Image (cartoon, rainbow, N blue to C red; front, top):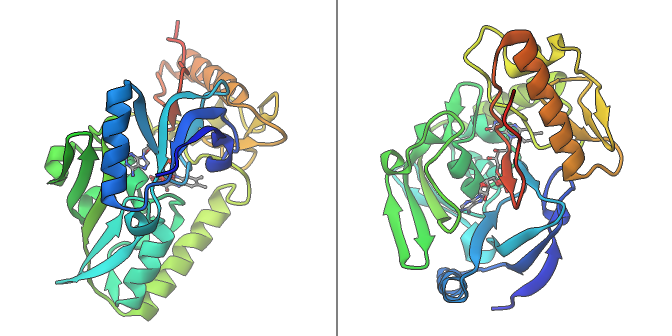
Length: 294
Ligand SMILES: Cc1cc2nc3c(=O)[nH]c(=O)nc-3n(C[C@H](O)[C@H](O)[C@H](O)COP(=O)(O)OP(=O)(O)OC[C@H]3O[C@@H](n4cnc5c(N)ncnc54)[C@H](O)[C@@H]3O)c2cc1C
């Protein structure tokens, strides 16, 4: 299995920022993945997996770890009978949805506007339009240096945009329980959801999706930041989206440090104006920290 050194991770994040990984590999089969995990453990090297990097801020200095990107069999999709689909952790949601529609299986439509993979969706318990991964998962195959096994959604500790998974645990595959549905109906619903998304969010810009989780407050994170006057606020090459204030765009040559500086400012203003401590939804990889408020 080829392991590359110092691969620029900006190529693998939707924001287009981030420095190099100390080591990088694209396993295509379970045995390759397990060998990589064992080897990393022997070398004392941390392991992290990237999907489509659509919820990821990678440190500009890079990541001192073996970074994995699942491919081949580990990104394949199969129909498994009883309206179930088994998808590799590296399979893009769009590919899984396409497969489900062709098989006449509904229930995964909510993921049409989540531009990630199955692995990232499980890790984040991704969701939209009232649906989420927790609602469709029956079991998830997780690999570590000790081998692989299937976990139930309860064992993954899924809650709002959260799982108990930790780096070094790799989502190899997930089994989804769907239900029979006319492909034409699926297509119509996906078209409608995508149109709603396009109207509300900067879908044609380089972003990483929602920056902050919605707080326990009458205002969503986006509305709160908008009320704080942050729409269009820019630091370096990064800008709070003029269309939706809970998105950060790579306006022109942004760095991760620019995005973090915007997040710090957004948290400061939300705290001062509303007494709310916004918590980030985006995953941070490498030596990045958001300073405590106050
Ligand atoms: C325009 C846009 C709209 C979005 N809309 C939504 C939305 O409506 N709802 C929503 O929930 N999210 C949304 N997102 C965020 C993002 O798409 C989701 O969080 C998605 O599930 C991330 O998947 P990914 O494969 O890109 O993961 P990445 O961003 O690559 O990684 C996210 C986390 O998952 C881990 N990970 C990824 N793959 C694996 C694996 N195989 N095994 C173990 N860990 C893994 C990574 O280490 C990281 O910690 C949006 C993003 C964008 C850019």
